[in-house]
Length: 347
Image (cartoon, rainbow, N blue to C red; front, side, top):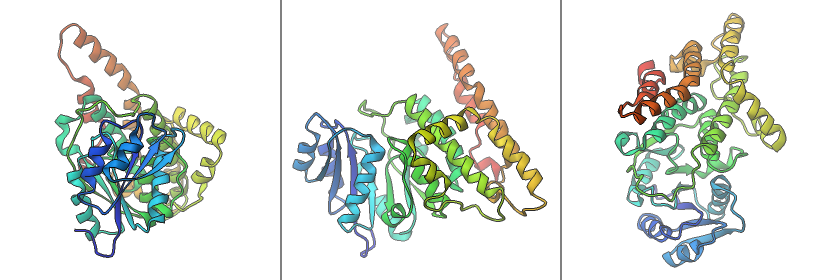
């Protein structure tokens, strides 16, 4: 059960979720005092159905994406006097009956971020999504200074004191990755709880190509600024502070776009640059890049993984060609599993 001193609500970003929003709200209300829904410019009566189900609704006139809706929800929950929020999707990909798991974890660890993990039911996750989750998990965990089992699950509990202390500059699905990296960069622990894996609906607004590219570009650009700081300081894994260089860049859309594009294009050489810097600076700056050392992984392994992933599209084309002629092979799965560290094999 949650701490008696904590006031917790459920927050739900919703866009054209009329088929599912009422069930999600009613399910959540069985476990928390109230639910706040951000109606993100819906045109199908989502707001009306949410209110009828018992939710408090904040209306966003024009659809601006999940990240913007989450920021509106965080501020609204703070105004309501909440100490923490449980974020859920509106499309029934999160089972409200898992909410008590977050509340129990929060009662034991009130300052930590609690993230739902679906990795114990990998067989339920579509192959393409699972492979992208493994890759994202590797790099986001590096940026967050700790292993996070499922970095792509939006079913989470956030202490609002944490959210208040970080600057969120992204939108859409990038924001959830941004929160994890900046929370970890500020020294916050990120814990996992098992949640049900649900992929039996088609209501998700996640764009597999555009959103994955956007998340990838931001993660790489964040890691660059993190490692620039770590390289010149001793024993400093926690490099995030509000209004640091990454936040400043994020204020200016054009500059931010150029910066992310450049770091994305330079992704193969970025870890090479920092490896050389580590070699050159190590005699002067003792124990720099301490977050990498703690993972016991090293830049050579990161360089190898990053360069091997460049041939993943070719592997995918070969697999598709073989399957087209009747050969049932899963080359991409085998490749990703073999190439991308699970962190268990780096200890």
